[in-house]
Length: 313
Image 1 (cartoon, helix red, strand yellow):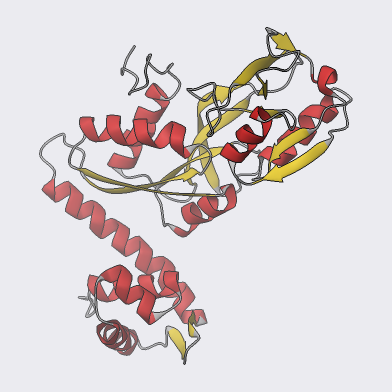
Image 2 (cartoon, helix red, strand yellow; image 1 turned 180 degrees about the horizontal axis):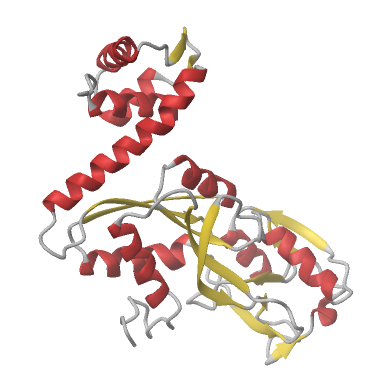
């Protein structure tokens, strides 16, 4: 039996479900609000169920039937996009739209080299990205808002399939004039009495507390901030020390003040960066290609002066 509804109607319905309002969906889909409303009303008529409950000035919410239809609609749109990409691609070419998510702190380290390197290899891929907190990016994966995501492995990635792309050991940053700033490595016990500046976005705060407790130190947390550059600037101004995972390409703070990075000699576990996807989703050819590219390149050392690591080296 031929379906008597259109992909455009499904697209509008998914947009309304994701944004929570007709007006927001209209902006997202570059359509009129009246057009969105008419299309969904016709879709409801053709399916024989009410999908949304409209509330004046309060947006919409899904009915029970709408919740069931939403999952199927997302799957149909995904399959249609894959069909379009396959049809448009030349033989052996990777093509189509691909959205990746990234934990916000990892974005400046991972997203630029990925976008640069992958789109050079596969110019027919329309690569988009979103970033946010670990929970926001994880939810985007589970809801189908992105195809792949780069996250820290916390051991609680329920519903996700994860592959490690990079591992880093935590290290300490100190003001350049600190007595231990010139050390090759130090123990966290040497900083036991000093104030700790914590990056307050999960999972880093819990990591910092776990690392200090593992060596018998009760952390003396002085400041928490959700800005990683604020952490580095506070340390550079002498307000305390901090522990980070990713290595900055500069030894100065946002304000241009000097910082010292010192290795930690305590046996702390490495922190893994993973590329993840929803476990119940079959990856498209382009998503698999990006995951493979990430595993090949993100573990490589960055060339002097920055840029994209050379594939296969």
